Image (cartoon, rainbow over all chains, first blue to last red):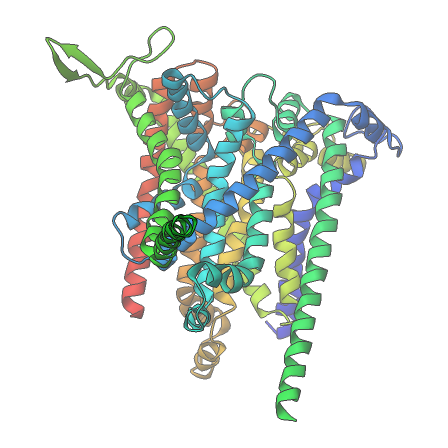
Length: 281
Length: 317
């Protein structure tokens, strides 16, 4: 087997995998412009289902609810993620450290159905004893925030590990108060990790269907819940239109953020080069 | 008079400020808060709910609630454990079969992901350095589109009057539509599709760090490429294989959405059984018992993985 053939093999294998990954998404988008009521039978191209989407009040209410829950969930997750990551990273010895770290990673490995069931059963017994909370937005938010905190902890922890403690020590030597060390040194260094933790936990919440189904009450349907209940019944052109809209938004966001980070990287390099040349002259 | 009262106020102010700054400087208060707050958060939302599930799995369903665990007999609390849910699960052939078929599907998903993902990661790690970030981003990009929508897309492709059957029939390759939907095949396609990136990412991270000099040495010593691959590359990437297998196997075992949308009524998986016990049968103790057994099933591979990791770190240090 010569090297050309190996190259050809590897290229076609990679192409096949990318085809497998993207073909369903592309098909979903193409058929969203199909005018026919039957999703998979192509009649002619039109924007019909997008017009229908605009009038679909169930779906619009679900989008609004999902956006609300996802934003709150992401904020809460990042907050508790920072606390957990700091507690685990700064303090190597405290009572029950092992328990905290395993509780923080449990939601990552537990299947969603178990997390959903256990939270619901807890909320039901809470309601039994305290008469609070009613199932609805708050309970869904709680479930998403738990899952999100576990993910945010992983993201923040991995960044904290990369950062060296010397900068913190230098700031403390220069007379900074612990709170100043955190707000002026640690937090700015952590910012990229916090942004990616926010985006990740937002997406997790916006995507979740299992936890929401367990934890929601009557009248509270998130977007994935609406999509899931329609997809269970069969193919539905409205789902294709929703999919295309979300894919468009995500693609634009991903491209914009990758441009932004590339630009930041270039600027950092330029500034570094400038600093070196200044130092040498 | 006025002066002295002012002075007293100042003294009190000074004391308060001193105390506050002391408290702030003394970071052990902060330490307690920093550890205590996330502790409480996870205790309430992760540990307590699981204990409640364990408790309910040992109770019996009564009309609107579950039986209480502690009953009072002549002034003494007595613990009443009810193992009927567990006994039922272990004696019922359908439940046993469900657990076994979940294991089978999860294992099959892992193996197929490995078979597709290993060569892919290998080729990706060998491709031109400047292309690799883009190739990696293309693997992660589908993550950002909804998981549910990607599964729905497969439904659209696989149904009898779906896109694949339409294309194959229009080019004359088949006369009648292939029955692909609601079979183990459609389930496997959906599972592999969803979990493949979880296999590729750790494998690529591992393989891109492989020291190529080992391969050169093996070639110099006369090993053919296949032998080199089998005896050098694969053993060196063992950590990546295990990490990828864990990331695929564990979530695949408890999957609910994919079998529900693509598997049809005949593919048995534990996640679905749990869901049905809870939502259709309203049998909380049974659903809880199914959940507890599922946790035990997941803990086994986790324990093996942890043991392997601690052995590895022991070897490295």
